[in-house]
Image (cartoon, rainbow, N blue to C red; front, top):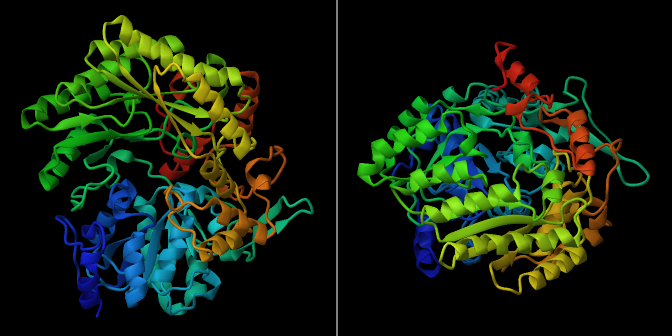
Length: 613
């Protein structure tokens, strides 16, 4: 039935290859030959989901198990969804077109707060109740992982269990526990899953609130459930699984190249950066291991480009050796190498210039703020002299186009800091003019969103009106046209702030917004701010309470029962230093006692040295 209906509607949708499956390296297994059927669900389009490294890794890990089959599921675009609903076609796995409801486990990747309504929409399209409390034993187990789970509370009403942290080892424990306990019913299964370190089962916890609306506590309702769930991590990154034979997509994806993950974590300590905190400590793969992995992936895919992925690739201790060896080995095969972004200094530009010998690509630098005062506040270790020296080096190496990333709405920001962004972009342009050509300078400006588990998690986010005022200040400051200016929608950033720091009560608003038609909220053409505000108001919730309110250090935060391994005292100390503009050195300059070494020591069984000094 699915195949016949599918064949009839496919010619009527854009990019039909999003839904066909059958790509090179895709894995097909007969469902009646395995014990566990796992739907890897990504709540956005095929092009975005197929670029997600975590999905690629888990797909191979799960399918490598003889007892498990994993199939991919992505959010169908609005035209495909309309056809599916009209013809009663349920959401299905790409590999076998088996309805998602017939799988045993559905695992969602939550990497961005504005994908939450897509989770609900995909469950509904699969014929599955969206509320966890309404799903009995006859429904699949619904779990979720990804960076958004460091504050799981807004999605607590919809997800049966959250996997907190890195999943390469944790996923095996979840599958094994599922097999051992599935016959005892959902509630018994959830209790057993909650015993696994790194698994948070929200239905086994109860949230209570103070009279002023702040969280009083989130506590377990049963004695043998842990009061705090600690993030999982892979201790020895050299031994960690990777995507050896990633599926080759039929349509161009966002990142259409080999993802060679060189390390996890970051030593820099930018105070706004959630990833830089929650993926601590830094763990590297050796250059020898990376060379081996690069050859394996190339042999299995035929890609002609590889990206050296991490939060700060130039900080890898063997990066120069790695780049030199990759170029020497693959230059003759016309295989290019790219960096996702580089630090704004001449040494990093020199590294990028070596890479350019094989294939030209754009240059992206992230000074983040327009003045040194502001960069000190956010602990961004870049000076104006660093940036301009990097740009000069880049122009000498042949680049003519530079993209600069900035943020506005940062704590203590003034209009002078905003105007500094325009001045810095102008100075970059002038470096090129002094060298005899007209460079193209693009300044992309995002709005700061205070995120959980960071030093700025207590700070107030600027209101929509204030962000739009600051955007206007920037627009006027860029009138000289030395650079092209773009910015993010302030309303989108505001909703992101609401969802990022929300508590469990937000679940009702997420449900109401979805019922009102909200999904694909990360896409400008589908984002409906007014519907979201109506949904929040209808549930008696004030968005300013979540996004635009400064929080006291003593306040219980909705995510305090999720331990990412970073000491709260360290986060407080970093926020206080930001208020005085005091800079904290990176991990390589000396340990600041963030607590990540203790988390890694636990993962290693307290063996050996745990931080790369």
